Amino acid sequence: MPTAIAVLNAGSSSVKFSVFVDAGAELRLRVRGQIEGLFTAPHFVAKSADGTLLAKQDWDSGTKLGHDGALDHLIGFLRQQQGSMTLAGVGHRVVHGGMEYSKPVRVDAKVLAALDKYVPLAPLHQPHNLAPIRRLLERSPDLPQVACFDTAFHRSNADLVQMFGLPYAMFEEGVRRYGFHGLSYEYIASVLPRYSARAAGGRTIVLHLGNGASMCALDKGFSVASTMGFTAVDGLMMGTRTGNLDPGVVLYLMDQRGMDVRAIERLLYSESGLFGVSGISSDMRALLQSPEPRAKLAIDLYCYRIRRELGSLVAALGGVDALVFTAGVGENSAVIRARVLDDAAWLGIERDTAANEAGGPLLTTTASRVAAYAVPTNEELMIATHTRDAIRAA
Ligand code: ADP
Image (cartoon, rainbow, N blue to C red; front, side, top):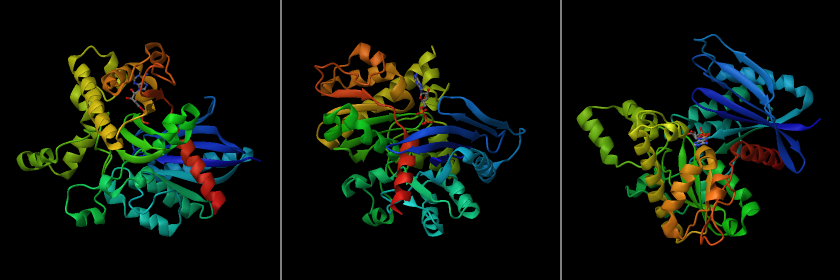
């Protein structure tokens, strides 16, 4: 019977999961699904890799299933699947690995306690990421669990890159730029050799443009800088997050408007970005279809912020050999890619109109001095791979 790795990505109101079977040279997706609406109207769905519905369930509106309830349901579902595969371990997406973790780690009670220390660094994500780990440790203590961090890939950044102009003691305490979306960047770096030896071995900037958005400068496949910082609200403007913001604005809001931490957090994380500027939606597809001037303005600002941050990362790398677009917008929107590529014409980028509209992978002409690609990311596969490797190494 094949062995399988389950991957969990637990957020504030949903738990996404996938199951990969170990097919020797590769891990093959077998099942994926999610339980969403954990505290409102829970809804569970599981599908096979080809999209066939395997199971679904709805709970009454108002049911508070919570993370533990969701995990118990998932365990039940996975047990039913056990007839066709043996679960070798579970990999978890964990947003913060702090200064300590530069690679995935097998989790026991001691490691879990260490990861709890990072809750204040990512209060909106870390507690939810850790909830299923805790529950599984209680319920199935012998099942290997591996935590894979969004920050780990950026631990290769030089101290200078991580530093703010704050008193040095704060840097030592951990107030520094961590960077996020590391599992996506690591996956892209791992598949780049399939697309281009120059991109894999040179200076490449990856644009992860999803609901959350950031960019990462890779040198020979290693992260040297990125746009997100101490938290995942820094850098590019996103679906509902501000991106880079003068800290003086926060002081002003506290001082003049009497806003407290929670109100400012809501503003910066949930009420800003494409949604806040447009007043219409955080969804790029909806904005691209909207005739409203503010939808256009939000898209203009989104692209302008990419243009500015791209220049900054090119400067950090001292030049650039390739660009890579990934995640929802980067993989699917020829319109946004075209705008970003044309804004970057100063780098010697020449867009290939037909190739971009066809989705690439190569998006630029043969004459282009810098090549650009669209490459699908796969954070779940990255987590499954790390989990399998960590279990094998044990
Ligand atoms: P998440 O960060 O939640 O994983 P995704 O990577 O799925 O999000 O990206 C979601 C974003 O991608 C949404 O803004 C969505 O509108 C956008 N998107 C998906 N497909 C397209 C498309 N064809 N054109 C423009 N935007 C798209």
